Amino acid sequence: MTKAIEILRAEMPNFHGSDDEPKNWKSQWEILDFLQQRLKPDVRSLETGCGYSTVVAAESGADHVTVTPSADEQVRVRSFCNKYDIDHANVTFAIGPSCEMLPKLDGELHLVYIDGAHGFPHPCVDWMYTEARLAIGGTMLVDDIRIPSCRMLHEFLMEEPNWTLDRFIGDTSIFTKLAHGNNSADWMHQGINRTYPDFRYLPKAQQWKRDARHAAEWVARATGLTKPIKRVLGIK
Image (tube, rainbow, N blue to C red; front, side, top):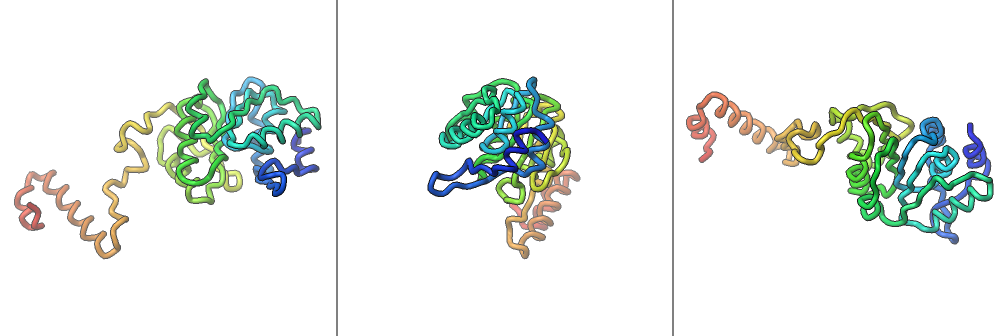
């Protein structure tokens, strides 16, 4: 356990919320241990969200960027680091919503921790603006996947061949990037769409009819019997 984690455990500072209503939305201790192991002075890292993980990144010496809409969080984290002699010169704060700040940032990354705004579509947007910057072999952490809007990103990455799930730590999934991918250019090449056409949006009573009709249309195209099968199905 590092000095920073020891102090965080002992002091349990509140970096979030207002001065009148302080909040403590800390990362899991196991995640902080994981970050402490991965973050080194030669690592470039980025997180959406701010808190205990930022203190751990400061102590590590990594070239770290924290994206948060709250200037108060920056003040509290830097003040905490000053109080306990944790050098934070290596940490850059990008103050503003991640959807506005991330497009302004550049440079290769080795680790990305998505733990900012959790409402849809923010986790996916955070990934969209960072995935191309992440080096092959780099690490992508998706936090709070027990929240459906966060789990959507997890489920998407599970289907993509250029990402592999490394492990779960609590409700955080940790992926390794295997290759660069053109994930947004063609929906037909995305793993999440491999079940196309998917008629689960229809009422149950209509799903089997639509599935059967699609299957018949496919057979018609494959066999060249398009016109006879369309007549049977009543399709013009």
